[in-house]
Amino acid sequence: MAEPKKEIRLNESENWYEVLLDGNRVALAHFVPNGEVRIFDHTETDEDHEGQGLAGQVVQFALDDVRAKGLKICPTCPYVIHWLKQHPDYIDLVA
Image 1: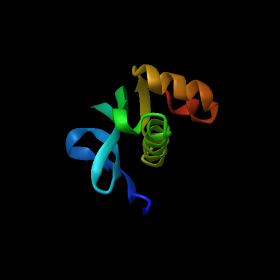
Image 2: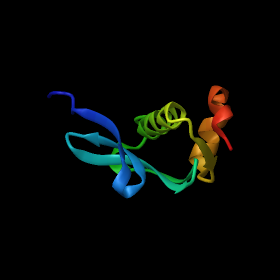
Image 3: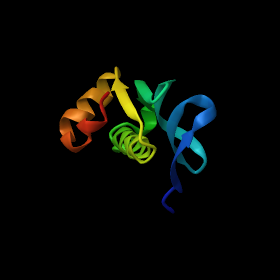
Image 4: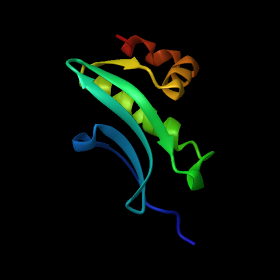
């Protein structure tokens, strides 16, 4: 069986970054835009895809995008807060 096609992208109209497998959203990191800050308030992974590292991948993709755009973050989602503790090289993004 072939590996599913994975895409991680920004879905600007929904204010979230998402992981798609074969075109189906299976994980996301939601944010609330607030000027030059993105408030990351929720991360979720579909139950069938938990434990595959997708939440971490979408958060890293999101924070790389935030950094590239010169923005900052305000993490209120417990998962994003935990992820930042595990990846201190991203702590400079916290407003």
